[in-house]
Amino acid sequence: MVSISNEGEDGTPPEEPATDPIAQNLLDAAHACIATFGLRRLTLTDVARRAGVSRPTIYRRWRDIDTLLGDLLTRELRTVLLAAAPRAAAEGHDGRTRLVAGAARVLTDLRAHPLMARILDTEPETLVTYTFQRLGSSQRHALAFTEEQIRAGQADGSVRPGEPAELARMVLLLVQTAAQSWRLVDDVLPLSRLTAELRHMLDAYLRPAPGQEAP
Image (cartoon, rainbow, N blue to C red; front, side):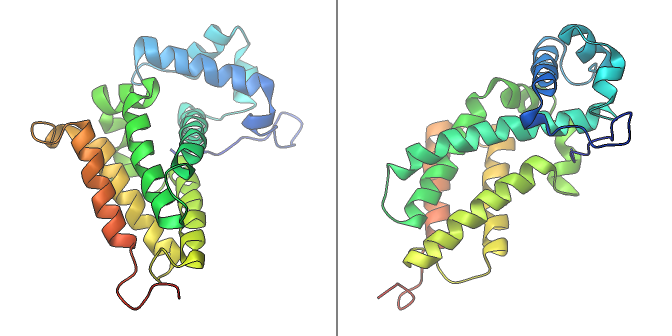
């Protein structure tokens, strides 16, 4: 769900959702609509009605339901990432430990997040495009965050050499697959075990080979 904002009626770009209180209210309304009706039936008209605004108000900010959902998922994922970062930082002093702990925390928090869990459990097909074909805005934000953590780990010698963008995409694939396909393994890997195995995989993948460690 690529987030694309429409221009306003006067030809100027609208405010970014993060700094636009009306947009935040509309995103909250969309969240409530999804909780009640699911994604399939969601329309911009439904969101405007629940938020108590006119349809032109919402169309000035989003051209269709996909662009609104892109901003909503980006907002919610940012919340998950920001919440995971300080807890991950408390688990270790080096970049690899923090990144692995953060990824495990993100997996756990995504499974517990009401909106993400609703989509993954009942309407995962709505995310097919962004699983198999292209990146959405929320995934790009996660990649930027992960690349930053990988660079920090390479700087302190705890993450192996490699192109941060490439390593970050592999981390994204592992976490995303674990979050979306957990039902395939839940019979032998409940969430606690799945999270432990994810930690093991990421730590082994990012750990420097002998002789690559920082002096």
